[in-house]
Amino acid sequence: MCEMFDLVYFSSVSENTKRFVDKLDPNAIRIPIKTEEAAEFVHNRDSVLVVPTYGGGNDTSTVPKQVIKFLNNPANRQHIKAVIAGGNTNFGAHFCKAGDLVAEKLGVPVLYKFEITGTPEDVSEVKERLAKLWQTKS
Image (cartoon, rainbow, N blue to C red; front, side, top):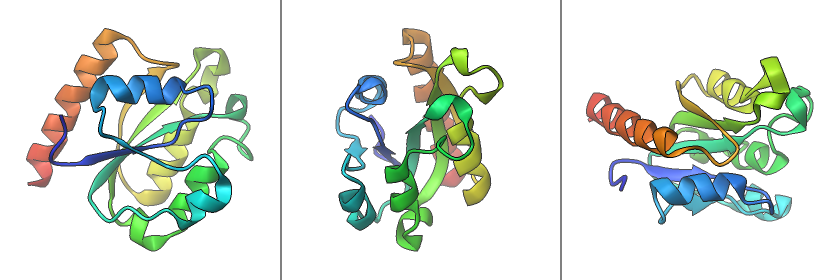
């Protein structure tokens, strides 16, 4: 689907984020679940990061530790061109907060926000936005 950017994502064992990403690009690259493996994981191609929101928006646990470990590597950070955020509307004002935090830290846009595993409309919209992002970066 996305020859222009890789999709790099984190999904816990619940696999909600994975189910959404699989609808976008079955060849997406998953950040390892084990924290120590995530710290060693390097991806050297331009990417859009898909990140779920944890902890109901509690700022100390909002971004999964594995994503933090992945982004601690400058080589990984430099290749992230945008963020897609997952969340749960039950989190209220903290819906998709992890995406906001990561995008702000990296100075990249939040391309889209989806709930849990996303809807067919979310998938269509994300595909369109990824195509537009590619056009602006090429």
